[in-house]
Image (cartoon, rainbow, N blue to C red; front, side):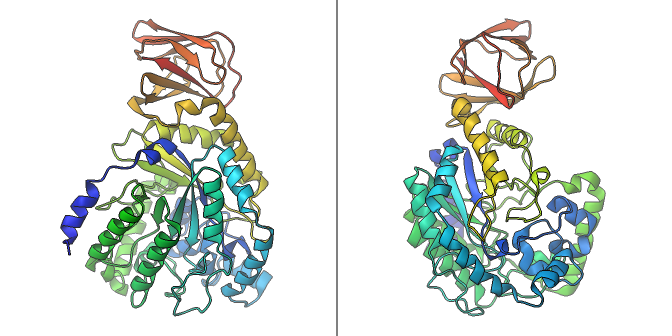
Length: 483
């Protein structure tokens, strides 16, 4: 059997497949029993939760999918909500009404909405931290009998997504499973230390292998960490790539180690919590920003969460976020809680110009298996913009630089494709003549939304861009320059 080091070297010699570079836009789906209560505190971002109330932050985050843990911590908004609406009913009681809602589920309609939004791949949460499997797994949970759905949600969605011409991927919570570790989690130290041992590493490994064998996912997206040591993990990657030669894995597979084992010691955990809490205090306002997982020995792409890289990255990455502060459906979200389509598309353009993709989440309701209208509306706006300007996005690569600015302060982003450079003006273009500062590009220009010619000419160290007709799109206008 090859050593872990030799296997790792082989893994890292493998190039990221072109399809993933080209796709740019994917849909994440957080859906499960947690969508029945559909509740989390509305106190800002996950970063703000840790900055404001670190000592119980894990139970105060805006993620409804963490409800199962939050209701175990007395005095939290989630615990109070649960008592008021469900009394002392256990979390597992939500499984039955979630499955009842599946009678109204139309996976083909979902797939069509994702395709029409311009997405090229879909990643479904198959098991979140609550441990509920959205497929009839043959790997039995030793702590909760029947903790799977009777309907094969994973298989039904995979078939619908592929029928719509999209790629299908799976998310699996490898680092957390609250059916194996039921202790309430309050701090980040608690969270990091809570990866189960005992029977869990073999259970998680068997389930991920089952997902690979059954569904051949194009994306294998693990969360938090991984319960085995590095050797078995690298063999899993190698077997996955043999089964799915153009598959990709993300960067959240932090393997078990002696250092992580030490976090299970209360004294060590308290020390780590003090250090983290002090670091958050030093960061001040920056502490409210999102999460960038640490680099690991092997991955195909990195996954900043509600965060992004500000410069072109050599390594491929994927920004992941919900449209509001939660991934799972939150019954209390209003239109004001959602980022605007303009903000989401502008962040997407930024990511693409810097070698990133966007994995944009939808959080469907459970009672009627429907995606909320606020989310569908934003997907439709993505689709409209991409149908007009997609040639500046799909199949592109970073150019020599990602960012530019006009002399009136309008942001411009750049992407490249064979034989052309794309200029993407973010926001409404108020004039038919713009000057981009400190830019040299020569060639014939063309607006992508209507095909009209655009004059490109130098103006000293700058570039003057003249449109034939006014630009009407308030989100942004893309120009292709043949070079």
